Length: 301
Image (cartoon, rainbow, N blue to C red; front, top):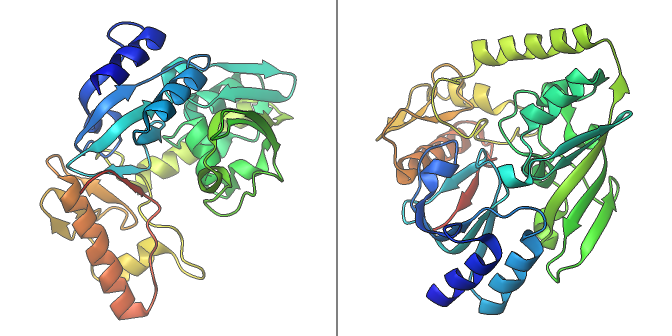
């Protein structure tokens, strides 16, 4: 690992390769163990970083804003690559918005509003990054990334740069081809529509009020914990199962919105996982419905 660290530093700069970095600092759940090595390259450094890590044949894990992750208490072995602020550039050209993978969706939606472009209002409150949104076709309030995405630039496992159109992304509910094909998103291009900025802002404020009033935003979480089962709403099933406020350790089914598992301040990843498993078991037993986590589990539990 020491040789790998030094070689990565030769690309990223001294002090830019963190050892035993606590991943609770990099996830919205605020739980999880440490990464052996942690780096956050810019878009020019990323291909070389991937090349070096591949040559050492060590595990590599790519994360974005950490808003849809549960990292195990024993952490993640190998190298964790964060696609973050150093890959956060946003540009606007007419009705097109180009965002690097580390750009937060809230910032992208904000830039669209400033330029009088409508179509990303639904994404203004999603706490994830552009790259993560492409991986899972993020959505809220009836909108999804597939509705506005026209092109995605990605790095393939063999180091080639790919330009994928929306059809090639194979978007569906909380799915794209990115993870299954081992791609790494570099940037995305969105096609929006000109609109009155006041109308755009009004819609963004309306959705913000809905989120604040209905979601437990005052606690760390990963947003909606479960995917929507066909024909049902996960939160209602969990509430009807009598699980509102169900708690293990510091993790709890939010009484405010049962679709959220929250960290009440001292949770371990094991607590969160135990609550998720109990909810799945109880809903399955009572209603015969299988709840699939929307949260991605990483590392050693």
